Image (cartoon, rainbow, N blue to C red; front, side, top):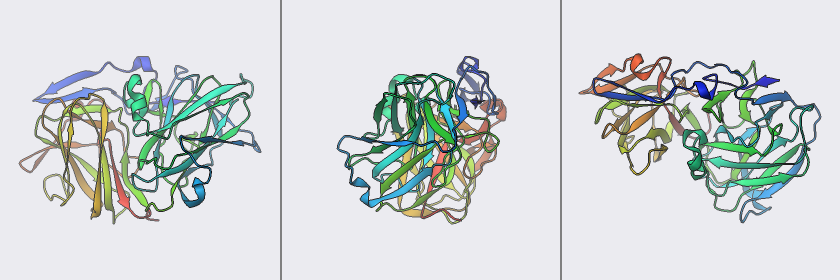
Length: 405
């Protein structure tokens, strides 16, 4: 048996949000550690090996208007099928996995499927249970519980009631007009203990960071670190319309539950970015924000200068204090250098950029943020961001075409 691990030992030990104000700069610290340590049984997500030769019965679930013939023109855009552990999530707990597909946002979903185990611990309880599932635009744990249903991508949610605990593969067939994001989260909830999904390895098609969203450990729980322990990624396959073009993720640092930072009004905050490969023709980027304000984004060749033409975008955010994902697309694509500076500016001191507080899982970023004024870059002191907080935005960059090999 393996238990869950996360950035902090238990939900009760998470610090109360505080504000630090230094020289006009404001940062709200929501998580003062980025180093992941083994946790206590306060978060009892348990993993048990699945017996070799276990047979999974297929169970088809139709979304509203779903058609059994829809799979004729499908393509596989995400595949993770090699996991060999059942994960007992706990009764009534919504747990989600970050998903990156191989197609641009807006591609039509055809179907997705995932295995479930009704008796994860063979010596534990079994019997009937209900499973609820859906795709989410962002990490459910980044917003209050009451507003998490608003993150569900319409037409992706389903429910299945099983009268026994036999292993099954749930195949969800979507209606004809369900559009997916390139980067999203797949969430699942079981009605009783000792039932759960299959987990354990990185995907073979697409990408998933080694992290779960788990109650008390928002967007940042894992199983101890792959390959020594099972990867915190669900077995899951997603099929989309075959007409969708290919894309790959050049950079991904995804933790929308991270800390918040505002450098002061109308001052750019810069994060150094190294893409996973050269030759990226960018078709999209997305960045996590929280707080009302008018946001400006751009990319430069370096922190002080060299605006990359066409990358500047604007995002007005008013009427919500929840974390938002600002998504932007580019047609035609924009050629990017492998090393660049991504910069954000806010019109006031109420808005904030979400600080992932960790190293990127695709690409690389140094542990440093800078303010930019009059083409001069000044490092934000690490103690302002918070002890152990890796200075990095929650940011994803998507490139056109197939991933380099």
